[in-house]
Image (tube, rainbow, N blue to C red; front, side, top):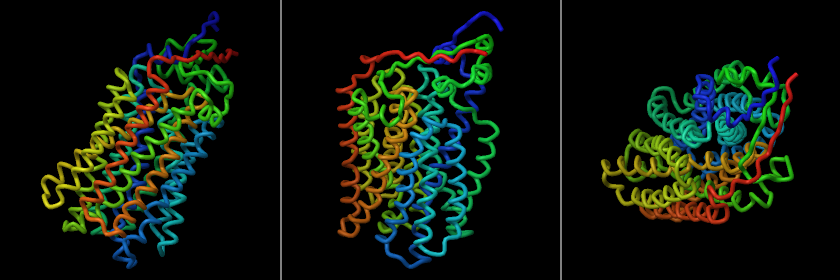
Length: 454
């Protein structure tokens, strides 16, 4: 073994060209989030078929539309602390396995109650998968590209949701609504095998938890050969230091509590909009006079717009991330409101749905990267997961919101006006976070953790 040589993990990632191994991590996390988006949104696309086959009224769909969201919330809240304790890889593999088994079982539901229960179990896996994908990806990125790469990976979610719409429009007329859930179950099972074989543990997690130097060195050598002679590893944190190493305690500690609440609020409000529209647009458009296939296809344009998050990530790496995302949510308010004004014009409806989806999903998809950069390593998985988990209650609220607005017999235009308002609340929350935790001014206290070579 050469003379003692210590390697700073983040400095190494910053100075080494982005490797094929990091692209492998990106690809695996991307497909996890893609399946997350597909399985989360699938229920909205099959909802019109449920009303026909089982003879249920629209308001009765609210429990099945929101069941996975309850599971998502509880899955995220529990999986974050577990990942900070047990590692990101184990939780990711377990969560994808749960998604596959539960979604496949959902395809054989005999009634609404069975479907509600199985969608809840599916949600447990979905809730655990997404935050740990974000955390793992962010911990393999150089600082100058972290937001852009994390956002690009997170684009898998809206793309998966859009893919669900296109596939549902093609599959349901030929094989029925159950075929969508069969596909949504088999694919994660295949991905589970790939994760077992190819997915690495977070190198930052391994250093923070004193894993063997040889194991850390083996991973880093696949990124760059300069790590081959390392005998110890140092983990530096720019985030404010806390006394506790427990993930929940970090998120709720004095240096982080206000920022945490504002992140929860922003994500909550964004998901009110997202799930209100992704779950109900096919039905609202059908009621407005569109045929079922056209309603599904136009609705699928809304989550497809999430590809704009790559540009947002690029801007976040260079400018004030809080302000970039806040502007996105203000524009979301205007864009969603505009959808409600063009119900009778098919061409404008297509343009406005895609435009609103691009803006809204760009802002929403940027929040996990913002959270990942806000917390230190020993609380990062919990911080991201709790934002996603507590935010899911916004998705639940959005599903029930449109059900209630329909029960109150509000018209197409009025429903979209009400759904647009949470965009302003999300923007306000991010500006409060910026005021309390000015980005770029609080560097915190560096924390070093060393793993000695053998």
